Length: 220
Image 1: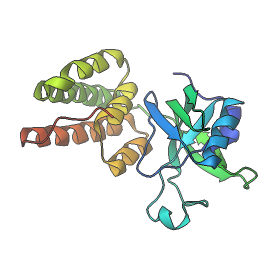
Image 2 (image 1 turned 180 degrees about the horizontal axis):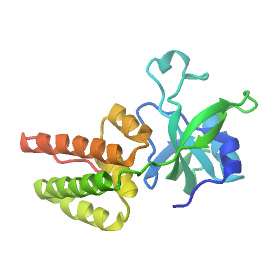
Image 3 (image 1 turned 90 degrees about the vertical axis):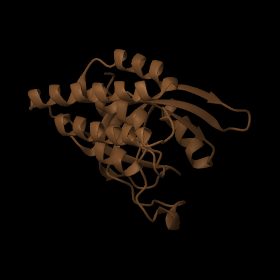
């Protein structure tokens, strides 16, 4: 995986959003229209092309234009495609590269917020548990595909591209776990076996909903 450079983590611009979680190896489309975040994009593109997307904590509405609290663990990544519109807005694709934790927020020298972040490791000491939960997750994703013909081919293609259990957990979570709190919990979990189980449980719940007459899954 293409990790962010340590120097990029020392001054990392953040784009806080409600209900949005960026996972490693997943691609997040962003439409940027606020003036301060247009400046963020220009600043990032002139440097390491790096930014982080923390999820805003509940109650952010009262201070949205300021510096409302965010979840300290967040996804960081790199802008891999950009389109600047004639009126100054941006369409971006950001590819997740790292789990990071906010360790310091720099004084507001810019209109947008800039932090120092530490990279978080994935702990995979329970190799047997990792293999077991990865196998179960692949099986339940297969069953979601069987239950939803329109999603069958995209899900099958997705599974063939995911080579490691860590990629499997994060990318499946990005595509099939809709609940924002569940996504944040998965992002914060560093133990890979536990992370895989969390994703498996969430996708199994989706599958139960399909069996109970729910609609087809949306690939996020």
